[in-house]
Image 1 (cartoon, helix red, strand yellow):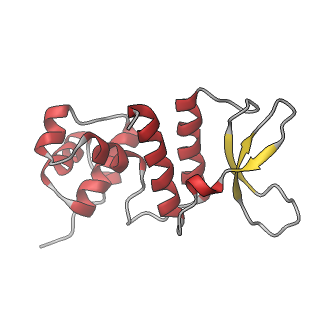
Image 2: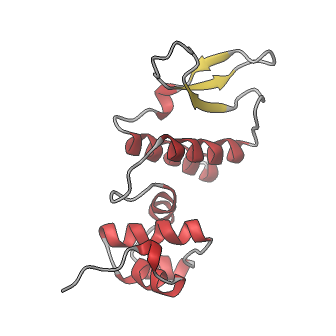
Image 3: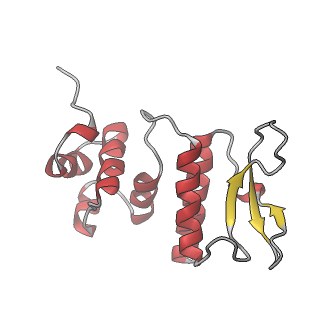
Length: 150
């Protein structure tokens, strides 16, 4: 059997079929690609795919294992989180991912603005995972909790 065409190269209709009838990595890639293109599954389709609302949300916003996770993915997740919270730079409570030392060590961290003067505090305990993929998953989980009040 030949391998499937990559999700980025198929039509929306084919992605929907993969999202509903495939499982695991193929399903994840299809759902992630659908979300990038602005397409979503209905509640009935999610049920048919065997996914809860939380599982579906996580698959939409966490890159699949076939895709390398970069700082861009972390920043996109933080942008969604800040948007969910109604925060924009330089609002108190805005969270960002950066190397604020500026000494060239490139040790990025999570920082939260804590006052009107722009002072920051380390916010890494809530977001940092062992890998960049785990970090994005933790941020997505925080977004879900805040959206649903769970």
